[in-house]
Amino acid sequence: MTSPRRTLFALGAALLLALPFHAQAQAPEDIVKAGKILIAIDTTVPPYGSLDTQMQPTGMDVELGQLVGKALGVPVEFVTVTSPGRIPALLTKRVDLVISIFSITAERALQVDFSNPYGGQSTVLLAPKGRKIAGPKDLVGLKVGATRGAIEDVVLTEMVKNNPGINYLRFDDGPSCVQAMLSGQIDAMGGGDYGEIYLRKSSTGDEFEQKFVLRPNYFGIGMRKGNPALLHWVNTLLFTLKNDGTLDRLSMKYRNKPIGDLPPF
Amino acid sequence: MEYQFDFGPVFARWPELVQGTFLTIWLSLAATAIGLPIAAVLAATRSYGPRPLRWLVGTYVELIRNTPFLIQLYFVFFAMPGLGIRLSANGAAILAMVVNLVAYAVEIVRAGLEAIPRGQIEAGRALGLGPIRILRHIVLGQALRIVYPALASQFVLQLLGSSLVSAIAAEELTAVANNIMIVTFRNFEVFGVITVIYLGLSLAFRALLGGIHHRAFRWTG
Image 1 (tube, rainbow over the protein chains, first blue to last red):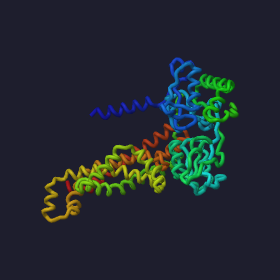
Image 2: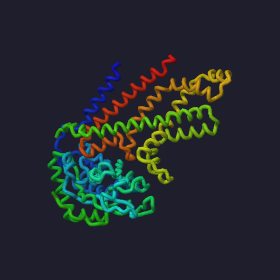
Image 3: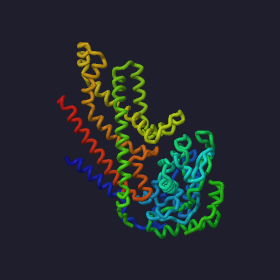
Image 4: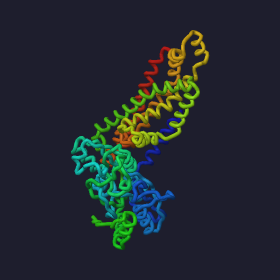
C-alpha cells in the first residue's frame, strides 16, 4: 500500500528539486572554481552553430564560446538547445551562458540579461523568386511559416494580427521550417538573411530570395539575471574581441561579410 | 534571485488554451474513429486471412511499431508532397496518427481474436454460418470485450502522443503552450497549466471509456 504513496512523494521531491530557487550570484571566479563553463548553443543554425562531419559543434557562436572558455582558462562544455529552449536552459541552471543567435529584445530581458551585441543579422521574409511579395499585404491568402519562438515569429505574429487572411504556421525548429518551404508546404517563411536556403531550389524550381526586412537584430550573450560581475566581464571580453579584430575575423570566416556596426547599450 | 510564479499572463490567454485543448481532443477522436474500423479489419486479416495478406499486415505493423512517431509525422508532412499529396497540417497530423494507431490497435484486437476458443468458431461453422457472420456474431463482440481496456489505454496514449504534432505546425495544446511561452516567457507556469489539462483530459477519458465499458458489456457479465 505504501508503494504508490512513496512514488508520489519521490515525484514531488524531484519536482521541487527541479525548480529554480535561491539562485546565488555567479561571478567569473565561480566559473573558474567550478573548472568548466556550460554554454548553450543551437546546432541547427548554420553558419552560427551546426555539427561538422565529425559530429563536433562548429560555427561562429561555437568559436566565440570557445574564446570565452579560453579567456577564463576553463574547458567549455556545450549544451545543445533549441530556440525556445534557450531561456529555460538558463533559468533551470543547465547552462551558464547562451551563445546562440540570441537576439536582444526588451521582452527577453525581463527574464535574462544580455551582453552588448557581438554580431547582427536582419530577420527577413524569404520566398521563391517567382512569387510577387512586396509587403505584408501580399501575404494574405498565402501559407507563411516561421520557427516558433524566434524573432521572425514575434514579428510575423503581429503582422498576421494586422493582416487577417495570412495562413500562419509555426514549426518547432529551423530545419522543419526550411523543409516545409522546400517541399512547398508553405509559400513564404521568416528567417535570417543567411543560410542554406539560398543554395536550394523551391518545389517549383525557383530560387529563393529576400522579399523584405522584418526586423534588424543584434545578438547578445545571454545569462541569468542578478550576476553583475559576470555580465561586466562578458562585456569586457566582447570589447576586447571587437577592438582586436577577432569578431570581424569570425564574421568573415563564417559569414563572409564584415561584422558591421555593433552599438553597445 | 528567487523565481516568482505568476500565472496571470498565462490564464489571460485562456481562449487559446481552450482552442488547443479542443483540437487535441478532436485530432485524437478523429484518428480513433477512422483507425479502429481499419484496425479491426486488418486484425481479422492477420489472424484468418490468406498468407500473403497476413505477411503484408505484419510488415506494416512491425514497420510502424519499430519507428518513431515523429519520423512518421515528418514523412507524411514533408515527404508526401514530393509524391504529389499535399495535406494541411491538421490533415497530415490525423493521417500520421491513424497510421500509427492502427499498427498498435491491430495487435491489440488480434490478441482478442486469438483468445476466442477455436471450438466456438467450429460450432458456428457446424451451424452453417459463413466466415463473415462467424466473425460478426461470435468472434468480434467477445474479442472487443476482452481488449476494450487495452484499446481505451491506447486511446489515452494517443491523446498524449498527439502533443508531438506541434512539430508540423498543427496548433494543438502543446503548440498553443509553446506560443504562449514565447510571448509571456512564463515557461514553468505554462508547463504547469498544460500538465494539469493533459492530466484532466486523460482522467476524464479514462472515466468516460470505463463507464462505456461498464454499460456496453454488461450483457456478458
